[in-house]
View (cartoon, rainbow, N blue to C red):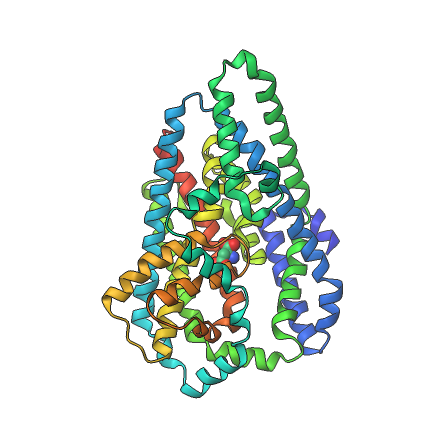
Length: 429
Ligand code: ASP
């Protein structure tokens, strides 16, 4: 494994090898009944790797965004960049939900779930669905302007100390960047230089962490499989089989989003070859797959966007914002899951209810944090909006982690795609 780190292979190949080796070790451990060994000795390595990435996400957003904004020279540019970014975020999210609805209404995965299996899943997972859903409830009850309130921190250090407050850090960095930009440059040159230098230092730290990515993802994937399969892989496979049509429906929607929607947008509006886009993005995508976290993937996504030629002021604005609010994969999954649960319970949703899903899944994905499992928690809001019980989530828990890995890939790709589009729209040649 260590020699893998030293080879000259491209990073995405090394990460893929890490994923492959992790899968093998996880499966063998489950088969031989020694998953606990993997959990004791490998899982901590994966946790350290993800922690290091998360550790760098906040400082990176702060320094790179200040550095980027101070380079803008014009306040109007900032507001038009903000407006264009939000417009693309909104359009692609609505598109993703609509695509999810289209796919799930055609495939009708709920019809493949027998009544006995449904009751079995409900009985087995109902306790898990009670946990953590208070947050979703609270989000729903706080009114439409609550995201605005959440964005403005009352204490900078509090915002910096919490990985889920990324939006507050973005707000502070923008605020500070605008102030620096508004003063004559001879009065602020040293501060500008300082942020530029800090930016380079944090980016180098990201490179150091990424040098260990193959081992990090190896440990993450092996322990994930050990966690899911436990010492009874047959049971895990049986559950997977029962929910396979549902899982494949979500995957089909996600693949269409990547290969049709993003490919077209990148080519037509981004002026980039989709092949190049996906090749450069592959380390971020593989990392998103391994960590199931847009936040943890942010430092690498910023590097990939740089390699795609997206200017600093654009990527440092669009990507942190996207990691928190733009979740195309999550919104698509929420639409599919809601209709699947309705179908499994024999409830036919009307067109008006499906339209409600477009609205609520868009909101729920905005409210989902860029951490593992957040999308499933927020699914409660979508279910309730069409009169389904939140307990219906019990039907999909068994395969959620795997789908989380895939939807996170789409989430981070959507952010990078938006950065490419905004960059072009803001005048990149
Ligand atoms: N894990 C996803 C992300 O970080 C959010 C989700 O649970 O859908 O982007």
